Length: 553
Image (tube, rainbow, N blue to C red; front, side, top):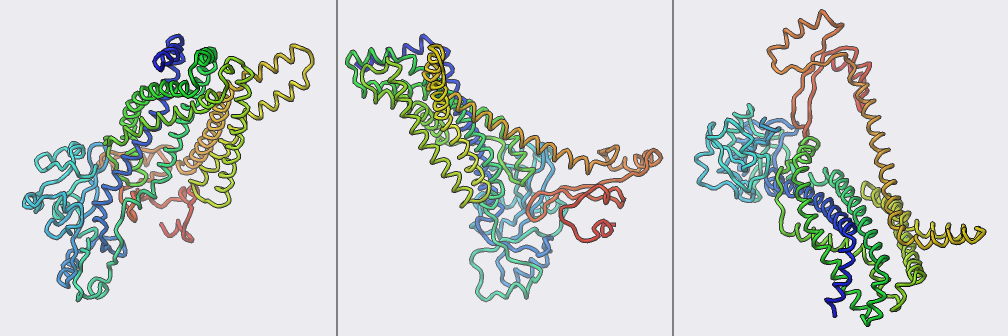
């Protein structure tokens, strides 16, 4: 009995292949966009954890200078002689193909065993690490970006991306620095050691950096990615819901015939679920493949953005677990269930011969509108709670999402009320027929109108936000790019000749120097300028000491 029912239901898609393509395309795109965004977020957070486990020493405390400078070797030696169990670390950046790579210099003989570095570096590599010409350790992708070091590179696959390990002496030579960036403290220290202030008063104990520190810094970035992925998933579900709803509308005679032939409502709903589950699995598989391709294509740019904004080290290649693939299939099935739940409920609750009668379908839709009104009330309550109780970016998303969802859910009821009012005021049979037919079409069009409302609201909101940002940024550039000509010099040897050439052809030649560095653990660019009135006249400062420009001169 089940197979003939499934055959009768599936014949609808054979007669209407365009609807089938729309259903599969909407669900696969929704799955692709959502799973792709989640893959990028998961890869980024995994990279944060790997980098933090190395940089933070597995949760160990650190000794750093109060002024943020390098720790002299003699200070480290004094600490060791006083009984402090510390291990030096040199931290800096190397220029490489495609950007910068973090270089960490460590002492393999004193590094605490609790650190992930100690677990990654095998004792057999110690002799090759020691010395100014020691080897460099990197993962395969990072090693390929270091031309000129092929003879000194050793590959460790578990090492975090964009990171190189070396001995402290090797790191000091490559970075052209003296001393150490910080010192790891072993968890078990001698009880009779002297106080830090009596040995090295210029140092301070700092808790270790963790993945959660960087995660909090980048939360807004990932939250925005998730929000756009969720919006795309919702739009895809709207397409699926519209297609499934249209299929239910067009198959009302088939449903009536099957019920008249003795098929119970339970068996009919189960067959419809089996049909939709099959389509969801196919669309989910296509969506997962498309999401993987999208995430793999976007991840290098996302990694570069996170590296530039936050100094976060993110792998450029996806490393996805089977749970991600299963999650993609699960979200496709869940989305299909949400999109088809209303239609399945109406089929299950109607009497055997009602599906062929449009009035019965309208009555079922009216009950659905009442449930939508309750849902809108819940969303409005959540939005109001976000305003009164919450705070921050998440509360803002809840507020906007609650109001948008409530407006979309209330739209069919508002339209139905307006149509009913217009029908009462209409005169003549043509007017009555027009409004009755309009009300008859409302259930099939309601979701499309809800999706249109959300799309227009999102378009207006994002468009306004981007336009405001563009205007603000253009004003910011107009204030700072006040010179008539900017010239970038690739070779420092050309600077004297260029300045001599320009001095006779301009009112002033104002050289600018800049370096890439870190300030308080975050990436920064430091610019050096010459004293000239143009800066005081055109460069507003958000925070400054009194008489700033005269102090700079």
